[in-house]
Length: 251
Image (cartoon, rainbow, N blue to C red; front, side, top):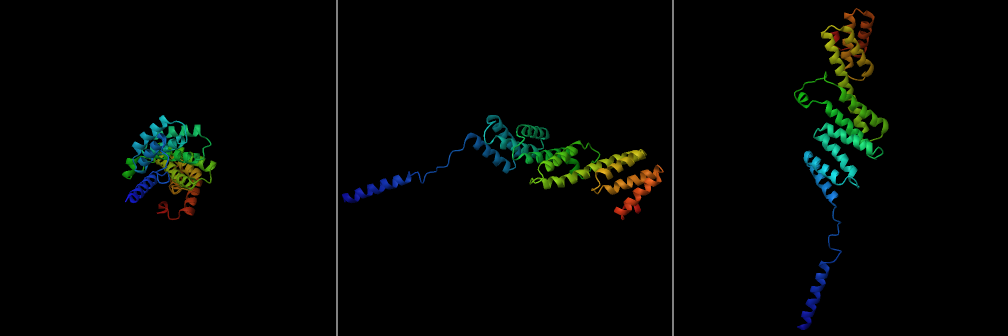
């Protein structure tokens, strides 16, 4: 009987020792305050709660301006400012990052984000929602976005963002061409034929790979005709015929 009691006590002590063994305990290191805060921010971003994420990231940026997460926090701030369309803060964050980290391995991403931010600044969500193309609005932000993408491609032609940047540049060229045509039509309404023709010519010279070339040639042919510049009119018509034989101009 005594032997059984002794053996039971020994077994209990052995099991207790195993339960507290380092091999079975949770040995994961505790997250630092910066890491745990960043984990909260990432969860907010993944949930699409960008406004809350911007607040969390700003707090992290203020409390931990240096350290291994500092640059990542700044890049995430750029992204969430873009998502909530806070253009001024996004551009300020981009300028600060590029100034302080000109050789950062992800600088191509930051340049790409600058293009996205400026492109978004050019858009008018309400007008686009109802299908209004206000091509006559100020194109300065579109031009800045175009230059941002061009710089990205020039500096980092093999960047994973370069392909999308090239496609976006084509879209921006069409947007800029439509602006020139809107101005040309304004001149046509006022019978300022030479000014209208020059706008069409500008589209041909700088946006010749866009669909807007057809309308530019029509404007040139019409305007030169009104000015009785027959050779220039005939040249515009011949070019239109060669490239757009089914143009509405011939109907």
